[in-house]
Length: 180
Image (tube, rainbow, N blue to C red; front, side, top):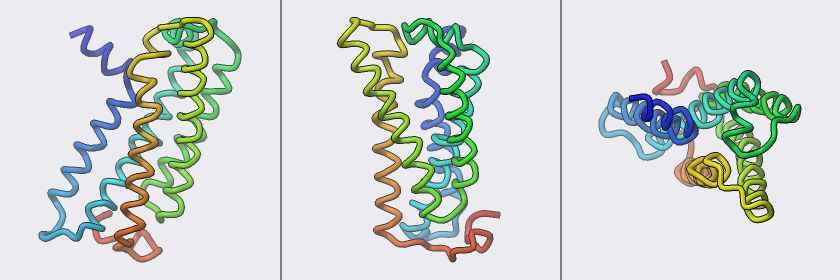
């Protein structure tokens, strides 16, 4: 059980991806049938932003702000005051993610774009570190590295699909057919 909990917490971006998918599928199941494809993608995108930008960055904030030494060790880097800066950036992305989740496509784009640049920069830093110092710590070359690439790809794919299918809501999200 301890190993399972460690796996879930150590790979929190993938955990939030799965939780977001479960919540999305539950919300989709509650939609009036037949649900328009644009509405299904809207639900997927909203919960993706909520969990993969908002919740995931909140978790990153907590880990780097309050457990910095442990995180540094897990990444394979020495502890640094820059971790507090990473925590602050993560908290900012979290705030934007929570606000953007149930707003317009443009606001969601901003949330995904900002956090994706941060995650892809993370992936680059991990590759560079692995190549220059042979660091193979779990958070430097494990599932977190792949999540840093996979999650932005999924986010941009959902944005593209939502744009392609059109938005099934008015600009005023309070009039959305599925947000209550």
